[in-house]
Length: 332
Image (cartoon, rainbow, N blue to C red; front, side):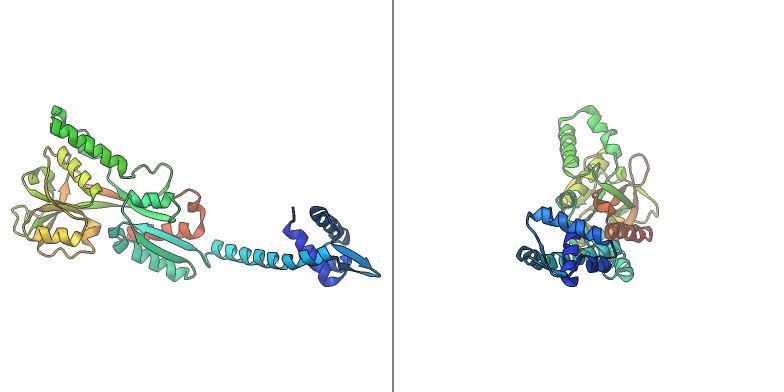
């Protein structure tokens, strides 16, 4: 096998015309140069130098190898420099995949801070919801995926209807379990950077009887309302929360577009629950926002995290981007 150090010796011998001169140039002994040239000739199974008088010159095989060695060594030097730049955060690339509310709230300040401190690191962004974003991460299409999941809620164990075993609730429970399995919330193979717990906020029409209460609203108090739901994972969680509060929500409208949710609520067509992050990038005109409590009286939240693969977590630019995301979340 031809080694890079042998090619460097061959180049020095060709440039200086002798083993001793090559040794002085490379800062080693003449016997060491001789040994390395012998090892290189053994690798290619042919003489590479020809002695002539007091000096030496390359054989035909030596000249051919030297021609290729020049390009090989130049390529190695360039690769070493690029790797050193990435390791020193003078260069590098981080591809982010994020769900929309994080794209508009957490990502901009995090990327701005990274760019200010390390302008050579390139950051790109595409949007996708989990579980698609996790599939992209595991498939090598990004280095970091911003994702969310809902902690276990009362609905998994405390639904009165489910306790009575009605067929409708059994079907709902089975559907919910299927949604949870497909939601990509198994993160056991990933490195998790917790960012924040994002509280869920109730949206009520401005004239709603509960709008002016000034305190938290329990989900059971909204049992008779028409509902406007969001993404599939959010809808599944809404059904679970409502089941924990003892009712099945009547979902008349479903949309992933948060301004549309606000517009529908403002028009008096129903009530909704949205993450607080979503309301930071949407003007909630014509609606009242209220804290939401689960059946056990605790705030409803979703967990927002940055995910990456274990090997990627060791890449300096990826680690720095995760740090910047955590910093942006801390200021929310």
